[in-house]
Amino acid sequence: MKIIAWNVNGIRANIKKGAFDWLLQQKADIFCLQETKAEPSQLPAEVVTPFGYKSYFDHSKGRKGYSGVAIYVKITHVPLISKVEYGFGLPELDQEGRQISLFFNTKAEKPNFCLINTYFPNGGGGPERLAYKLRYYDAFLTYIEKIRKQGYEIVFTGDVNTAHTEIDLARPKENIENTGFLPIERAWIDRVLAAKYIDTYRAANPGKTGAYTYWDMKTFARERNVGWRIDYFFVSENLSKKIKKAEIFSDVLGSDHCPIGLDVSL
Image 1 (cartoon, one colour):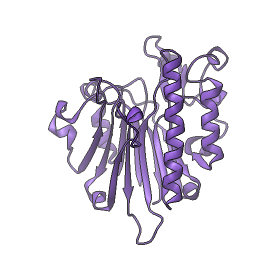
Image 2 (cartoon, helix red, strand yellow; image 1 turned 45 degrees about the vertical axis):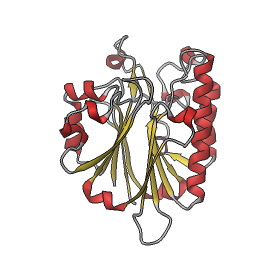
Image 3 (tube, helix red, strand yellow; image 1 turned 60 degrees about the horizontal axis):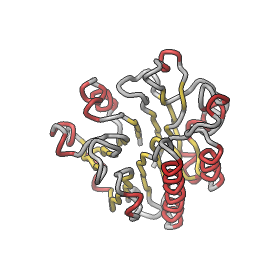
């Protein structure tokens, strides 16, 4: 199964740049978008339901044009979906429309497969927002552990908004006190790995440097590759041997993030 994820930094802007066409051309089984900043009613019909796909959207319940996620699934796979969940069931953390989980019956026997697309909060904007991000992190790990205990194989993807180690950003020393690379944020990724979830790109490219998924547009950082790897595909350990390919599409434009991809046998 080929899956692509992308923080599009506004799906309407992404469409105008022609980048949404690139997604459709990849003919992925599933593509997951973050920071869509739109509700389906604000989008053209051919974007909400492109030929051959069914879409699932979640959006901010209070602030318009903010946050939001979407998942597009090939029509042929839709009958395999047994359940769709939006958020955690926690009003404080669900109001910004940051998460969709799809539960698939891909096999006659258990365990089944769960795909989770999440746009994790940014910790900028003061101590309260950082605290919110950390509460979201904690709730997310609790959520996926509950699902795993039910026997599901798990893939989760999205903009985690944290670079894990020094090789995951171009200027680690300059950012050690900045959100996105704070020790307390990075420690959460340590916990995810300790819980035996696999960072698929890093597992395939353990020492690779200069591989980033986000660049600050105001400083033209992309042209200089002064970036951050903050977008991830993680899988539960029982899927680790089924990963065929993990990649970063760093040459694809249309956002301040680039798409990432995962090919996994399910």
